[in-house]
Length: 318
Image 1 (cartoon, rainbow, N blue to C red):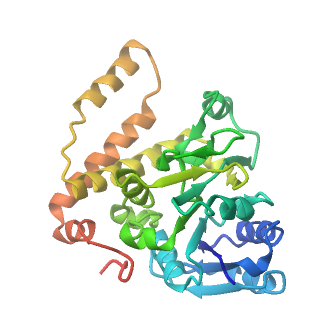
Image 2: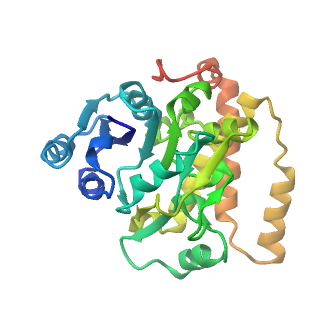
């Protein structure tokens, strides 16, 4: 009886996917209780060969292919294929704790629980720079770097955790709740299509929060997340902030919210000229937000894309 469907979208990251699948093959939970669905989003490397090599190690391994751009495409294709009522979404560059799926199963034994996550700990490619270490070590009870999808809320189960602390690289949800939320919004678009990115799983977390549904943080349900040397640069954080600005503009348009960036600009000016601080990341965010707003005014097609009711069955850009 399949109780969990592990869904991993991937594209041209075979070397990372291999490590992820290895960790999933060595879970404390019996393989008879879960399936693994790999959704290939147009890879031209040896991704398919990697999956085929793990068919003997994973009893229930499924390979799907869809080269329509976007992370939401893979997430929804997995949703439609899944045999289980609980969906376990993960990135292709995670290394799961051996107790990952066991912890997820335990938390969902409570019928009121609709969303489960755990730690997302850094697995650095190289020694991280001091400013990354300082950012990670800043919190005593909560360690978090959203732009790297890293979070650590400690070693105890947290009931009724804020669903925004459960990131998409370790995001387990009841299938019926995901349908009720309307599925995921666009995310992970190729850089040349970044205008069409949305707020991804943040939209689903918002639905759960606004409807008073229960989310749980379980440290047994944890993963390591690969942090490449390219991501440990200010340039990456600036680009990531720019993309976040696009995502937040998308959210504001869908929610009918009009945001004034004047206060944020003033704070940036104070940091820059009075406190002599580097404000390049914050500036990148504003540039992304304003860029998206301008493009929406120019393109009825983009506005129509943003206001789609759901992307589950037709998530491609037309």
